[in-house]
Image 1 (tube, rainbow, N blue to C red):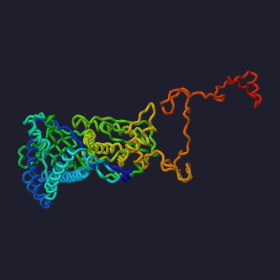
Image 2 (image 1 turned 120 degrees about the horizontal axis):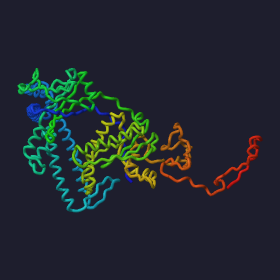
Image 3 (image 1 turned 180 degrees about the vertical axis):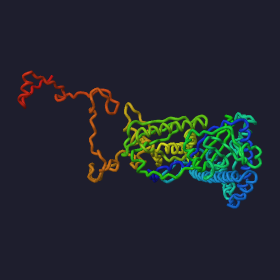
Length: 555
């Protein structure tokens, strides 16, 4: 048996550092025309600035940034130029991080293919020696040898781009750009594609500035909901308000976190705004975002003081079970289902609905923390690792681990519930081994995922997954100290006896809630029912003479 890998330490996930809220803009035709014209003009400036930033590559510095900003100021304004250049730098940095991740993926794929090509055909994997399995046939070996050369050519190209500081970015999205060549498959006409392409390339985003009126001078939204935009210099003739501003007829009312947003703009604190156009629905939206003050992370011991709800994330549901501070499962297992088919909006709504039910369950059961696995499937969906199991590889590739975790952390912070992540190693295997069969009853079926939720919760609490450790070396009592999987000496009630199964009124439901029949009568004399029969004289004697004998008649 190979050695088990070292488990990572559990930790409390920090809360969200930012907030974003959105509201629909019911604009008129005039407002829509002005917004489109301003967005297209600023979008063209953003495209040119991105091209200039890409040409500078690794030679970019503060002086180059200032030069780009001066050039854009003459074509828009100082604040618009600052927002455009900052967005360009963020986009270039994001592309650079994606390039680094792609480099790591290519190198991992090349090493996996080379390791399998070096093994004989049909050779089995040897985990103890760290040897990969060989390919099944000569044809597969030949196809993988050709793929190896393709991967090496890609790696050489990406390494050259990385060394030169060259990134490949498409404003508007690479997928939408490729859709232009497949309009029939996408079900779009050329005009509809043009409208969507123009909407994606528009730039209507302004960073906030603390100390300014309502927290933003470029795109301003007052406490009454009035929205106004500072027009670029070439479009100043469109202004309908003083100082080159255009005031929209539509008003903004942020219903979600509206009070928090009003308190922020009342103190003139920075709020960033973005205006988007959804061409499919023909709607405009305004999004407000701001940063939150850093909140100290709750200590792990404090988060787990009232137990934890262990959660096992699966392809179609969340399996949850509440555990007390000693790692004992309490109550019944819970499952929160969701459907990840359909559109992106449908999948996102399904995830939010499942997480909402999970948070409500955690609040009801009295726990203050949720334990989840720190899953990462970015490098685990390759055919080299999972072979020809296409169904399992598709399951991993569509599993929304990052979205689930980000959504859960954001939603749990509003409910004052901590999120604890644990190492995912062996939770399903050990949970099924130690908890699935003992908890199963004829009336309750325990799945492997339910048992895994217990293993996750126990790992977060710091307990071993197995229910009971081996006895001390001398004998089976606790002479050498209590067992590590048992409650400590300072735990109240740890030596209490288990109440008998018949410790309830006849005819009532048993404490477990499952058994309905009454306890059976033992076949002994002591277990026979007793009836006391007294005469009137005997009752009088009993009261007059203490200790008088009572006649007992058994029937």
